[in-house]
Each structure stands twice: as structure tokens, then as C-alpha cells.
Length: 473
Ligand code: 2HG
Ligand code: ZN
Image (cartoon, rainbow, N blue to C red; front, side, top):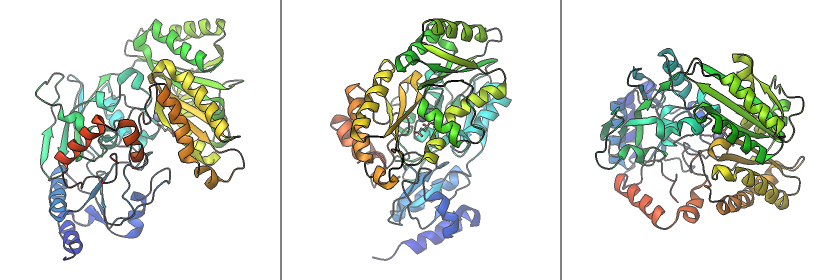
């Protein structure tokens, strides 16, 4: 067999020019490890095409050579979804240079953005046009539009605006054979056969490359109130959510739960980590209310509901942000949770979801089960209670060897997942499958569901060149 690698590399170099291909090991390093440091892969090069047309040419050349490709956006995956394997053959394709907002239309309430546009940049462009692009989460300063669509990211505002999928009207995709599918339609109604665009959202790059998308925009909020509350227990947290929702369902933009342990890590490890509650206690909730109406009366709503819940003994203490800076400071407590956990030592993440009504039971039962499994283990559940997605994370017992703790990762995940299954939940709510959870697919999605997924993969990417080793077992 002739070695196809050098000629292919030469052809890719000629096509992409010096800006478009990296081969120096020092330049490759940032593309080869994930944020959690779970994986370090190898690659002959990182390809950085500057346009959809250029990417299509890359994919054609690679398809002809049987060359596997790994798409990468902001490299913020929590499950190793954008890292090549250790074999050294898979090439990373960074979409970072496809970073133009092609169009924004405040009347249609749409934005057409390329895959490499950073989420925060998309939010800013929308804001300048008097609109809101509502997807929001801790990694928004790094994560990209292509990545959040490929993984169907959720984040903090799912309770109000849905996941990335619900924010997408149309897509442009480079298919595994190098064809470009232009599905950049900005229609609210379009029932013309199978909804292909939805196949690529959440496929984690295993069916092709999302290169651009038409995104939905919303009216910009004119009022915003954020409160941090110490609550009695998990049930009281959920009851507070219900009180807000019953008063005004459209006002709740985010409803986030945090454990006292996680808030403690924040105060200890994050610079300037102030918590504006005298006694945060064991259970803390962040409520974010927003409305595009200038006279929405959100302050009155916030105060009335908190008062009611204080009287009922559900809320023990609360602080309402008095300025933009104070609201941001409260949000920081929640968003720095992953970083604070990282600094405290080894932890095992469980990005799980259950019906919203079952979140208190999930937190309680999973925490107890893990404490029985490893005495001294510290549950750090936090996240998006309003949509049923709790990060049921576990921190090593103080003083335990991190490696010994991580060696128990599988047992810990199984323990949490047994509770999740019992409550009718999902083992991966928003972070996806990537490489970390492929071995759970058979157990959770096996049978007809997995079989259809495998047939779809075989139909669209018959040679398995798109992000091999991810999603499917
Ligand atoms: C968040 O909600 C992210 O901050 C990360 O989904 C969760 O670190 C985690 O487990
Ligand atoms: Zn999350």
C-alpha cells in the first residue's frame, strides 16, 4: 500500500496556505487536550479553513484519501467530543476562522452566523441590534455557534428559551463527501419532508460539519432582577420555582440550584468570591427574572414571591441584586462552580436530567447512594433545576488520593445513573456523549433507537470518517 499521508498533507497545504494548516507540535497542543484534561490525543495537523467553500474542498480531498476528521469549535466539550484519539491519524478541523456574522434581521428576528462565531460575540451583535440571543452558559466566552449546535447545548436559559435546537431555524452543512447543503432558510414554517437540520444538531460532528446557522432572536429584556436565596431543602427550592412560575411563567429566565458545598468552594477558591448571604446554608438558589416589557414590575414580583416563601419557611434568607454589577456578581457564584470544583481537587461529573418534579429526589437519593459507596465523598449538585438538568457532581473525600478517587469514576457514575434511571431521567442532559459516554449508549439507548441511529450514520457517513469514536459505541 502506498503511504497516502504525505501527498494528502501537501495538497491540503497548497489549498489552505500557511494560515490554514498547523503542523508544529507547539501549535497543535491546544487542540489536543480537553478542558477537563480527560484526554490528550495526537494528530498530524490542525486544518483551519477560512470559508465554507475551502472546508468543502478539504473534505473532498480527505474523503478521497479515506482520511478521518475531527471537528473542533471552542474546545469546551465536557465529554472529549472534539479531541482526536491517540492513534495519530485523525486530523483536527478547527472552524475558528469561519467567524463572520453574515446577516442580522431585527424584523425577522434572525441572525445568520458562521460556525466559529463565539457565543458571547453572537449575544453582543444581537444586543447591538436591539435583540437578544438567549443561549447562555459559563463557557460562552469560548464556545462557538457550530459547537453549541453540534452538541445541542442547553445552559442557563433553557427553562425559558429552550436548548440550542430550539434556537435554530436553518443550517449550512458540509457533508462527508464534501457537498455543501445550503439549508439557511429563515422560516418559522417549513414542512417539506424530513427536518434534516435537526439531524445535524446534537450529532456532535459525526454526520458532517455545521458551517453556519440561522439563529432565532428574541426581544431584548428591559427589566431584569436576580436574587440569591438560601432555601430550607431541595423541596423548598422546587417549591420556590413553582411559586414564581405560577405568578408569571414568562418572567423566569433561569432557576439554578446550588449546594452549600459548591457555594463554599466558590467562596474559598474564586478570587473576590463574595456570597451576599449571612448564612448560605446547605441549599442555595439563583432566580433570574427578565421581561422585554418596560413596566413588567419584576421587582415587585420578586419581593412578593420571596416574602411568601419566607413566611412559608421555604426561603431562609435572600439577597436581591441592586445593580447590573451585583446581578453579575450573583451569577458569577453559579458560573464559577466548575472552576471552583476543579481547584478543590478531583471530581466526577454527572450531567443528568430527570422530570423537573423529581429533581429534589434525585439530589437527595444520589447524594445518599454515593455517600454509601465512598464514605467522605462530597456531593456537589448544582445546575438548571428549572429544566430538570442537575450536575450531580461528586468531589473526592478530603485528603483522598485524586487518582484513587478517579479510579472509582465508573462506580460513581453507575451509582448516580441507577437513581436517574429509576426516576425516568437521562444519563446525559446537555454535555452530550462525546467519547466519554459511548459505552453507555448500548445500555440506555440500545434496541430500535440505537439501531436507527447507526443506520443514519451509515447512510450519511458510510466510511465513518466524521469524528470517529464519538457518540456511537
Ligand atoms: C454548567 O452548567 C456546565 O456550568 C458545566 O454545564 C457543569 O461542570 C459541570 O459539571
Ligand atoms: Zn450546565
